[in-house]
Image (cartoon, rainbow, N blue to C red; front, side):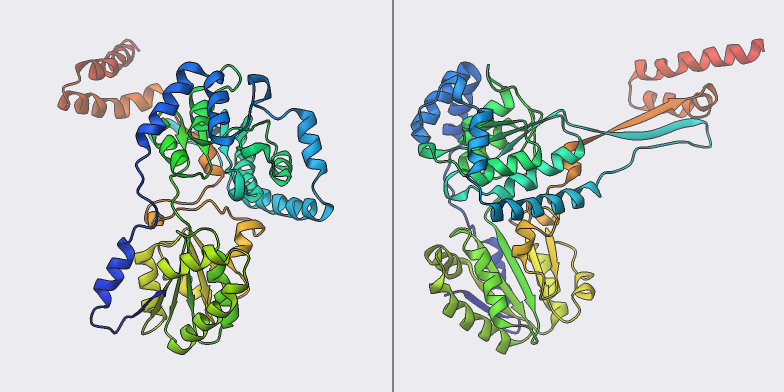
Length: 438
């Protein structure tokens, strides 16, 4: 049964805090195993990739067959139905249009002292995008990772997607084509992350790695961070639905189940000031759940991590939401925009009863790679900016150096960095001499 709380209960704070601190993923320590895999790939390159793919994916490869050939790509894409192609094309277009609006502008100006200052944005040169294989092989993840990178101007896009037993999801291959991916490799796990970070004879290294994965992939991303950039370490997915009494309980139940069916560690939370509505939603959910193909997964998620909270009012609901800092926040209320203004921490907000979180997974436009496990308190979802670097620019005229240079000399002296001060004062002396001679 899900956790059921009411904010007027005397033990609410203790139980809510316990719910917040509950760990929703296996605490398996895979760091040593991952470190060994990374070591193998760094020192043995393609040979290690071939051996590890045979061991973990039961797939015999050679260095020449690590990548999908153009002919294989065309064959897989031809397997996609016209209807699926059309839907994926719609999603790609909307995601591209949304992320194009995120492109920042370069800037340059001259301040009153005569210093020309500014910044410019440049894309990382190469990005590696990890796409899980098997049951969790999602073409939407390809679009959400690759399209912002291409919009940012990344020159080389590489995808690694495992194909256990040689099984390929043709929609993933089509998504790669629609997003402008340059290279697709049929490798996965920590070995794929190591190849992207350090390179092999076949796979050139990249500058940034993004994309979700299992515990081994997450650990590998942690271990290669610094050698390359990464997007985030994502945990189990979550949704929080705030609803008032006028909402359709079946719709809300389906929204909660849409999250629960991801995996058994996902979390679905309903907060409402209306206890009767909350009860109707739970009843609807329990009626619908057995009809789902992934009922066993959704049932485990709802049983172990599902939560229903009844509040005094919507303001209290918003305050609790900020403490949870959910990955996805649905505001199914009469005035969702007004309530959203009271929310500080959320990965993505979905306004109104006709904006289910599920549409955001595919076609609304904003990115579905979002901060989990309360990290929305300090981080954002994947965006075009994640594939860009900002370089600052400064140019001082002689007059500007004369105006601000003495302060730099003084600060260098206070920090005991004599060469710093001398590099400025030498120029100031030249300017003073020039001024005297003039």
